[in-house]
Length: 583
Image 1 (cartoon, one colour):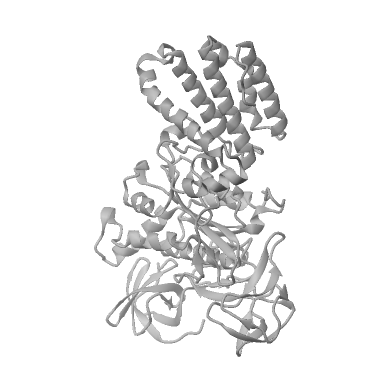
Image 2: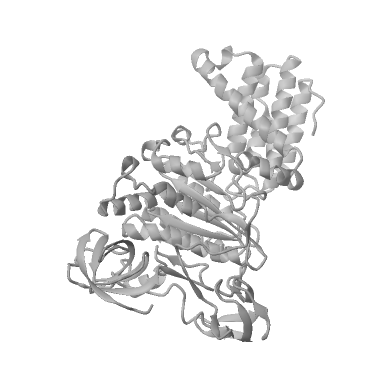
């Protein structure tokens, strides 16, 4: 960064510092005090500039020098992002730890991309060809699975004067366009969305491998989802599952105000896990931004923008990105703290009046798009929300729900009953069901919609019957209603419950989901028929095949065990007189 004017500190209020003597633009980066702490201009008042500082300001005093850099907060985009672990302002944490141990000293800056590692660059264009902003000019094999497509910066268009093949560092010049140098790396302001050609319809699902999400409340690629839940309901585990198993090409995980031990779990698990599609380590398709709860509050606000800018860069190459923000509540709390230091008029519950605008600007950067180079890329944004006391009426949850199309409501009661994932099937919803219907019909089964509708009907009937059961007990219900309760229990326990820590059950393919749900439906329908022709409820509840069906999802050879369960079920129902079964 080039440095420009110099001023001095006038006033300090926690992470908010008032500066005089410089003439910056909004969101320009300045270096505060003798330690050169990094900050960003967030307000201009006459001759005073208000700066939010991304590091702890204790010990600095009025009169210390301030240097304006003349540039906004930029991230470095290029080969080497994948497998990296950054803080909120893209400082590489492993490198900082090697330099100074477990605690980062203040005022330390380190480039986001490695300046010494060489990458083998293979050009895909020739001298004399025209190139547009965002065009692919060559490739670098960044990890085993991911080919890094080197793009011309969006603001450079013209004729390629020269382009070279070979091994280069990210800041070596690999060619020129109209006299402007090309490098493997480019810089981009985090608050400015990267350009694209056109937004596309969200009609392809993001397969997560989590049965309750894929079957009942699916999310589209390029879609937005919210996971609100009280303490201990499993938000972070859900985010981890989505980061590990969703069928996105690349995952950007933002631990925004997370507890350190939760972030440690991600950092230790990801390198050991394998991508179910390719067998390569999952970390090779992941960028982690770790901004834990004990790190300076202002950097939390930046971490969300840093993450989404990295996601947009890979989207522009034509990849599908899954972005996890855990949690947006902590981000909003950072905004509330900064806002109160600025003495702004507070909105609801002390949050700034522009809370909804900031949330909308973040979620709006999602979408499935046609890129500038005519490829198709997507960013799916999944934000966790931590409402105090699991109160979904608080401002962050309510404002988020206005913007997102999928609501996965985590339920404290389900978590207390050890039903995980603790997603409440009665209050959750997805607005993508209609647009995704054709995909599921074509790629899974024409029966998919009917199975889903029937499962939801049974679960809703169970909820209605529960009130009666609490008054008179389930034994007093008519036999058909008793079977409805057993049917719903099978859907809940066999299908909706999923063991995140199990080697097999942690991930469930869409084909396996379909076969398992269909088998449960056959079980329930056959049970209704058995009751109609005089079978006893007690006999149905004692069926051995029901336990076999429940255990099939944990078996590596799922098909074999499912077949065994269905054969046994068929035999048991035939002894009750049920012959006509669709399997």
